[in-house]
Length: 358
Image (cartoon, rainbow, N blue to C red):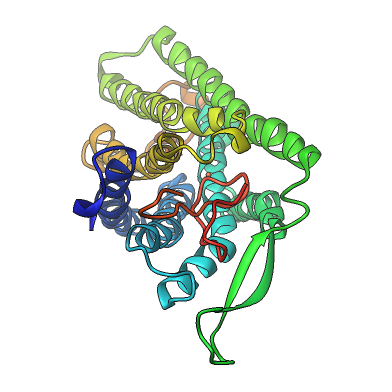
C-alpha cells in the first residue's frame, strides 16, 4: 500500500501509521499486560494499586490509539470512499473514542504525579505513611473521573448526521458521519482549552510537580547517612528515584511536541503534508511513552524484585519505623489521496466532501 505513494511526507506517514504505530501499540500492550500480571501478584506493596491503575491506563491508551489512529490512516492510504465499511469505522473511532484516548492519557499522567506525591511523603515524612489507606483505589478513581470530565467536552466538538452516498441510487446507502460543530469552530473555546488549560494541567503543572518532588527526594536521600547494613536499602531508594527521573525525561521528550502543536495556526498548515506527518510523529511519541514505561519498571526495579518485599524504613529512627514505598512511575488533499483531518485535532477523520476540514 505504501509503495504506491510518492517518496515524500505521505510515504513516510504511511510507513509510520500502517507499520510502526501498530508495532508500538501491540508490543506496548503485551508489555503492560505483563506488568499487570506481576503487579497483581504483589498486592501487598503499598503502591501496587497505583501501578495497576497506571498500567491499565497505558493499556487502554495503546488500544484506543490503534482504533483512533490506525483505522483512519488505513482508510486514508487505501483510498477507500467515506461510504465504505472502513470509512464508517473511521468515523466512529474518531468521533466516539478520541476523547477516551485523551482521557486515559491524562489519567496516566496524573497518576504518575500521585505516585510522586506519595513517594515524597513517605521519604520526607515517614510517620505520615505508617498505615496504608483503607481504600487505595479511591483517589485513583477520582483521577479517572476528573480526566474523563476534563476531556468530555471533546465529544461536543463533533456534529453527527446521516450522510447519503450520492453515487449510489439506493435509498439505504447511508453512513453515520460527523463534522466540526460550532463549538469546535469557536476561537475563544480553543484559546481557553487548547492554549491555556491543556498546556497547564496536562503538561506544565505535571512536569513541574514531577521535577520538584523527585529532586527533593533525591536530595534528601543523598544527604542521609546510612549504616553499612542499610546500604542495600539506600541503593534501592536510589534506583527508585532514578526510575521516576527517567520517566520525567521521557515525559518531556514525548509530550513537548503535543504542547507545541496546540500553539500552531491549524488553518494555515492543515493542507501541508509535512505538517500532517509531524502530527503523526507526535501521536506516535505519545504511544512510545506508554510503550517504554514497562521497560523502565523492569530495569530500575531489578526485574520487579524491588516490588516483591515489604520493608521498614531504614531512614527513620528506631522509634519511628514506617513502611517504605518503592518508587514507580508511568507515570493525551493531494491528487492521489485526500488527507482527512478533524477540526483542531491530532487525529484523522473521514470527510464526506473529500476535502480537508479546516
